[in-house]
Structures are given as structure tokens and as C-alpha cells.
Length: 264
Image (cartoon, rainbow, N blue to C red; front, side, top):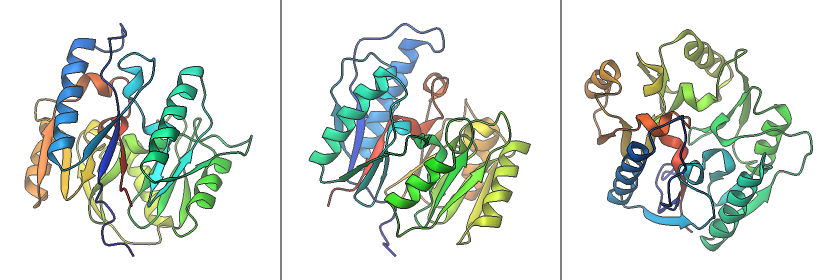
């Protein structure tokens, strides 16, 4: 097993561009939060690689759904819109330049988005919902045959898998305390090929973390006051916190705005 399972050299990110006026988020606050996000990634020894597209912020920075990147392999789902198609082309070109092998989902029946795909460092889980199906999970299994891949059915109306559970450390999963999140965790524990520690946070919006190069990134105290206490009490390695409230309104959370890559 690769002992550098959560160590990365690059973060592929969207380029800061003129604002798209949206009623879902305050664009100026979202821009400030995104700038802080990029700065933090740089501080964690990641080289930022910007995607050049004609899309506007924040549409051009939500990348997670458009590529699954793991151990030098990239799986690209089928685009669901013209704007996604443009981003996927830019992602494909950029990741090839970073020495990654690109595979495209070719099954016409497959539905797959990256925010339904959780890689623990040892195995994949794919949330089965309106956005990803069993054929999509099969595409993940075929692209990464060295890792077990388990489809996990989400409850009706439940959002993407990574809204409820993400990796928060080596063999540590962070999960929300809601009924939906706990049901997902139980299903995963029943099907998992490996054992994990779990960190349960009171607010579901705190469950989406990033674990990068030995550091856990989670949301700021003003956004997740109860969960922030849990992170302080339970995490005994490096932590950083940032505000992400506006960007979270248009994405699954912290994991949504970068593609983490280890260049060979």
C-alpha cells in the first residue's frame, strides 16, 4: 500500500475571473473566501495549476464533480452541460500535462459525479443517488482495479456522498451527526473492506473536510461552532480552518474547489 496516500504535489483550480452574478451566493464574499482557499493550498506545499476557460466565477471553480483523480489515473465523467464540457476539456488537457493517465466514461448508461465518489486511501465508495448510478460505480471500479469499489445507496432525497462524509486523516472518516449521514456511515461500515476511525461532527456542513499533506482543513468557528470544538478536542495533528459559507452554497463544500494531484 502506498504510504503517501494523501500526499499531493499539485492542486488544479479554477482561475479567478470576473464575477458571475448569482442569487445563490454573495459573489464578493465567495471571491474573498476562494482567495483564502487558494492561499492555504499554496501554504500546504501544493503548486497551484489554474484552468483557463471562458467561464465566470464561481461556475469555473467547482471542479470536484468533473474528475476523479487517484494514483496517476484520472476518470472523466460525461459532461451534463456545455459549461461542464468546456471545463472537462480543460481538466483533461491540464492533467495530461501533469503526467496523469486519462480515462473517459464511455458507458452511455453511466451517471457519475465526483462528489459521490469517496476515496479513503484504501478503497472507493460511490454514493448511488439521482446523480450517480451503479453503472457509474462500475466505471470507477474499472478505472481503478487495484482498489475495492463499493456502491452505497443514499436515502431518497439525500445529496452527494461527500456532503455527509469525507476523509479527515489517515484512516479517519469525518461524518455528520444527522440521521442521513449516520445511515450512510452504517452502510459504509457494513460494506467496507478496511476499518476506520470515525469523527462525528454535530453540523453536517462540517463533515466536508480536506486532508492534504498531513493537514486537516475544516470550516471556521463562526460557521460550525459546535463542530469546531470537536475538531479542537479530537484532532491531534495539524489543522487549518477557513470560511467557506458562500462557496458552500453552490457546492458540496471544501473538497469541491480543487483536484488534488501527485505528479509522478
